[in-house]
Image 1 (cartoon, rainbow, N blue to C red):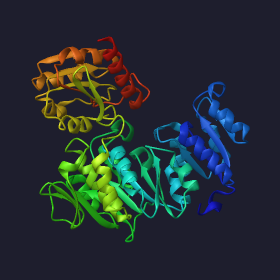
Image 2: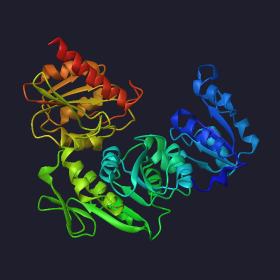
Image 3: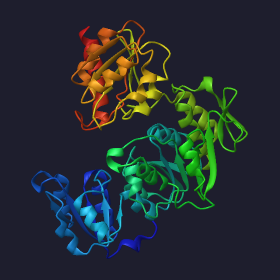
Image 4: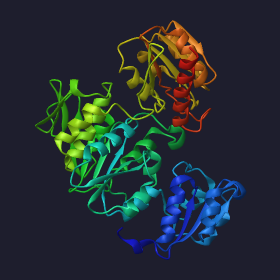
Length: 453
């Protein structure tokens, strides 16, 4: 761990617990900081806060009182989910108190170089691919961020002989100042999380932070097929490494005559790749570029692509049950993700979609719904989803209260060999705590239905 003295004697407020806040509080206390933890959850119900207090860390629970700021904090480490319009954050900004997320702490202390991956869609798949591709290389890969262990906890133990592959969100990136990966990967940009960021411009500004501190010895891997990303790349001071499925005349990773290349080296033929969906070629090319830059062996990359069938909740093949093929794409929390999932299939699809209503319509989903055999809509957006399906000419549309009910409805609408796909195009928080919980509910409902038939 480098620069261990930078937090010694500093007064630091950790705002919001969850896994990241708890890990950051403990780490900063070990590094000699005077740490106060503030969490919304009442103390009596807050086991994390109680445990931290026993370790000598000051805790304030049950709200976010502005009076806390009278303690003169040097730094605030904010849970990514807490919005910037929170009154305590607003007041802290007025007082010019730096506000960061824990990936900033991770970047400052990590001896291991970081490969950071972000984008509106595909982060988890690309991160998982990159970690697997780097196995067996000169530097052992560690996974961190949204996909794995809290980044600062990984960074605390990482050595210079290792690499950290980190999935990072716009929420996390917004709270960075000196965040400096060796390789930054930007997969795509789509209207997402506008309820948090307010405008698309603010969302893009947060994503840009992944490469803002890079220099000429670093690498920016970017999607040359995405016009917004391509334009942003002009601002990067790092070495540019584009990837593309449409342009084979570039110095990066690309598709040419059915084969994937890195620069001029052939890597693998598309037909040998197990992971379904043309959209995943972009994720694969990004992972190839990032890992080849960091020393991954071509043989290992080939092995991964010939065996990797996807991550859980991201176009995950649940299995063939009741003579139907079931796919769990619960991580599709926006329209673009569901568009790409639907494009992966040629056979008839029964789509389960719906969830949290963020105020948007689903007109952009209509072209992808054309040709869908049936739609089962659930959650807060079920009527909006149904309207989009109707405009797309979908003949069979059913409503369900929750995903579990939707499984039975989808089965009734399907025939032998059909694909039944959960790809909600919405966040899960209207009915489920996480997209993982929603996906698990889908899988359990399939198993229950299969046992009853």
